[in-house]
Image (cartoon, rainbow, N blue to C red):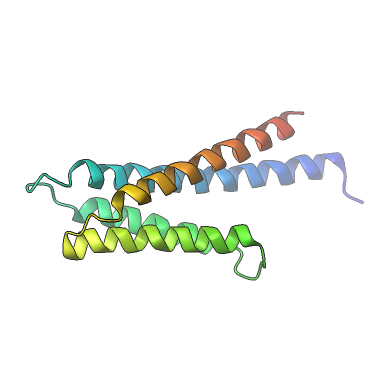
Amino acid sequence: MSSKKELVEDKELKLKGFQEIKKSLDTVLANVNTIKINKNNTDFDITPSSKIALANLVFLIKTLDKKSKSQTVKDLDYLYKHVMFSIIRVRDHSDFEFIDNSCKILSEINEGWDRITEALKKSVAA
């Protein structure tokens, strides 16, 4: 049987993990928004923003439990890959068709992680 201290430590470890995921998601969202905002700016170099966003998306995909049969995991994997696709389309073909939708997707996922992280913080403090 686990002690209360072990349960709190486990929650704290999960909270740290969630905060790392949230940090990466914030970074992706910021860089995709930067790309979106600058879509008409011919002097804007998309390379740094796309590189940072793609690297963080790879991290986010790797955090998913691929062995899980959870629909949420499958959906996140699909959505993260859709955002990667849209960034690559912009970077390689100057095709901004999917960037607005990617910003919306990332914003919604980000809101969900905010709620999860806050709920876990409250349970750790309890």
